[in-house]
Amino acid sequence: MFGERLQNLRKARGYSMDKLIELYNNKYDAKMNKSTLSRYENGIQDPIYTVVVNLADFFGVSVGYISGSEEVCSYMDISLRIKKFRKKLGLTTFELSKLIGVSEETLLTWESSDLSSMGLNKVELLAKVFGTTPGYLIGWTDDPKQENNENFQQDKKMEKCLDVFERLSDTGQEKVIDYASMVLTLEQKDEGQDK
Image 1: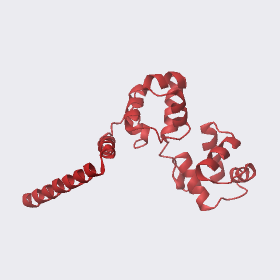
Image 2: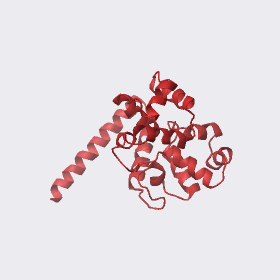
Image 3: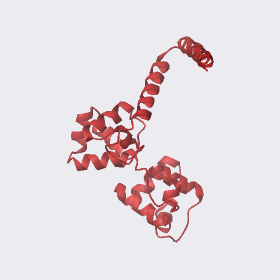
Image 4: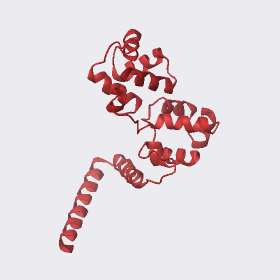
């Protein structure tokens, strides 16, 4: 089961065996080779647990799914969903990159699972272009139309707070921490009086 799922995930991404090995080895500082990957995919050899965990992480699925103990892959990673919607709309990477205000190279890195440069504002913009919800793109829901933005709004608030916080001097950061602690103490005190 593991080998079949691994092969299906690789092919769904459009990766040759060589490309997967290159990306995997770079991301996890590993030394997987084509022979080993072939043995995994053909069920001849079972990987060690660390490799299973890394491959699940790489493809954005659960360890249970990739290993075969879960029947349904309830999480399709953002990269696959972006690519799926882009193709469904008949957009090239160049066209979509212009619509959302990023370089084509950036969009290509997102579609190949490197989401380190993707902010929540871009997730929201992509969802708007695709006619879906941020929650669906992120994988919080399997329904492309279901509104589930509570977590998304919380993440946006946190991202905004962190952005401001990181730009402050050390003194400014200490003041923010002190103020936030004071507000929390007052809120907790108010909650105690309400009970």
